[in-house]
Image 1 (tube, protein in one colour):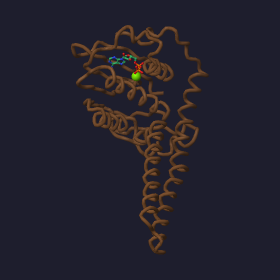
Image 2 (cartoon, helix red, strand yellow; image 1 turned 90 degrees about the vertical axis):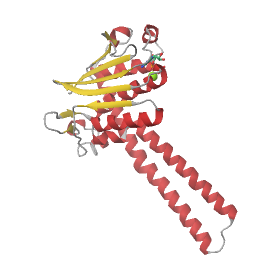
Image 3 (spheres, helix red, strand yellow; image 1 turned 30 degrees about the vertical axis):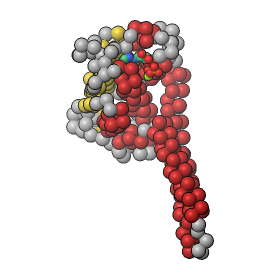
Image 4 (tube, helix red, strand yellow; image 1 turned 60 degrees about the horizontal axis):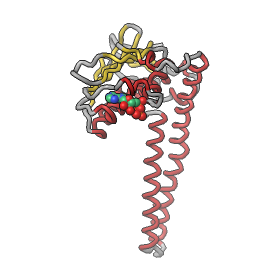
Length: 257
Ligand SMILES: Nc1ncnc2c1ncn2[C@@H]1O[C@H](COP(=O)(O)OP(=O)(O)O)[C@@H](O)[C@H]1O
Ligand SMILES: [Mg+2]
């Protein structure tokens, strides 16, 4: 097993300040996502309603014309496009599915990934059950102590702070993106399990494998970002021997707290 931390030796050791900064960045992203949704989302919906009223008013006044209707339809289409971009931004800032717990969010992401990339990704976990109650408000305020995500099921209860869930989700997302972009794989398998007080996520593809050169390249920002997040969570990121003839198997272990 190769710890990726030993590959990227030039990185500075993480200080408590850096860990706190990472947490506050995630909290800030979640706050911006909420503001975008509530403020900008509300504004866009008002514009759509105003366009609909205007169209109706023109018709009732007998002043509608093809040109005016066409312009209004264009505005409506532009607003729909802006709404779609806004939702993409929001999801990038903080995936909404995390409100249903890390397991549900990963399941959803794996199936979206399969649908969008055409590379089959299976996600399994023996941690079942979701908790929607804790997280719906979890990211709206800065006090994360009260905002714990609990996946409740007999035998596999986990409690994971929202910013930790978000970091783990981003690591998962980057690993899948890499498998799709670089591996020339035919499938990806991911598994999330609990090992004592450690949450363990393995992501394995049957592609070409990561070259030593890529591992040592300072431009490998995705891999470095993954490693940075893992270290921030007090965990480890290892490259393990894949179970298939070739490919990449990453193993992330993070303490629950
Ligand atoms: N699952 C993978 N299979 C094969 N090669 C990979 C995989 N993941 C990463 N790599 C290699 O590592 C390099 C760095 O990855 P990354 O740091 O995520 O940067 P980027 O995805 O922007 O190229 C990639 O360009 C690729 O060569
Ligand atoms: Mg990448």
